[in-house]
Amino acid sequence: MKTKIDGIVPVMITPFTPENEIDWEGYERLIEWYLANGAEALFAVCQSSEMQHLSLDERRDLARFTVERVAGRVPVVASGHISDTPAGQREELAAIAATGIDGVVLVTNRLAGLADGADVFRARVEDLLSVLPSDLPVGLYECPAPFRRLLSEEEVSYCAQSGRFTFLKDVSCDLAVVKRRLELTRGTPLGINNANAAIAWPAIQAGASGFCGVMLNFHPDLYRWIQDHGAEHPDLAEELAPFLVLAAMSEAFGYPKLAKHYHVRRGTFACDHSRAVSYDIHERFWALDVILDRMDQGAQHFRGRIAATGAAAAAPKQRRHIA
Image (cartoon, rainbow, N blue to C red):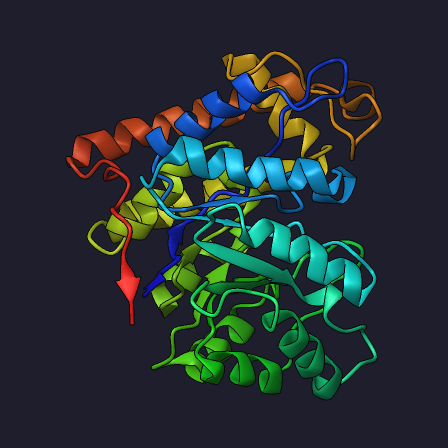
């Protein structure tokens, strides 16, 4: 049986100590924060986790720790797919798959280059699937680093019809593309989970299987509410959606270090050190804490409005399975 990955799926950040080691106690508190704020699955060892700056041992340990601490409360998927070589990719994905995760996520720019066609993509996919357990769900991630490679319609259809893929983190940032992919995957196990805040609400309305964007590190409960209750409260949803879009513009201010600073402010962990963002975000982006203050103020305003409806975000759903 395959665990279905959908709904509100935070891309997890990785806290580090000042000595540049993973802060495991802080990471455990972060896991509990995600779960308490409406996460329906967790995506570990992704770009937000700074996977390109983690050793294979760290990527494996991060995935295993997440599975152990979540303890079946929601599904956990992980990637760690960063190698340039076929042998390196087989090694790292096999290692991640052995950690007990509910799904392993392939990065599309590791499967083919920008100039490569569907034949190259398909051959690489089939090679990697051969080293993964046949009953392990597989996802796809159009990771923007080191370059964004969007799947062609032919590639989406191939993955959908194969029956092996259950999750696509869509980074097209294009509602028309999302809608077309929903058509291509209808009746298959492959769900389209949009990553772009600008189209989050209309993508959900169109039938996307949730949201998997960076702003789930700030106010995942608001995305959970708009997914679960937006259709019942359309006027409030249409007011909330622009706030979510505008708040998401802060991603440009040194994410993922920005998200780490946000969690240092709220006491989740103690250090905002980032391997991916080495510069001082406060020096580069002035009045950053004022921006975060106002973001929190806006989020609290909408939480109050939501509470008044009696339709607060639901508790995390139990894991689901598909044949």
